[in-house]
Image (cartoon, rainbow, N blue to C red):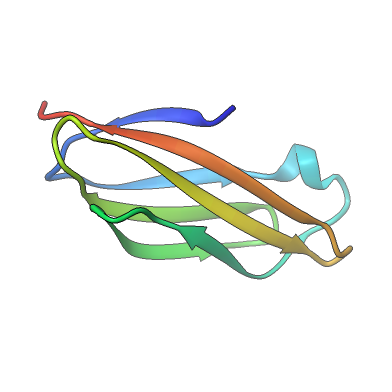
Amino acid sequence: MSELFLKDPNEKLDYEEDWSDWLGDDTITGTPVYTVPTGLTNFETSNNTTTTTIWLTGGTHGQEYIVSVKVTTTGGRIGERSIKIIVRNR
């Protein structure tokens, strides 16, 4: 199940995913791959060995967007998570 977030079309917000519980002693390696639907803008991404962060701007009032991130670990595992962004004028 994806996490749910509300966002105003004019906001630029960061969304962080903590992978620590899933990783155990493993770590994220390389650059995570984000899938961002048309309508939202990926302003910036960052990560360390246990978390991923994306900054998003834009969106259209009344629309819902699914943003996903895929990571690879030093142990060779591949994980993917999604968040749902609901855009509403606030």
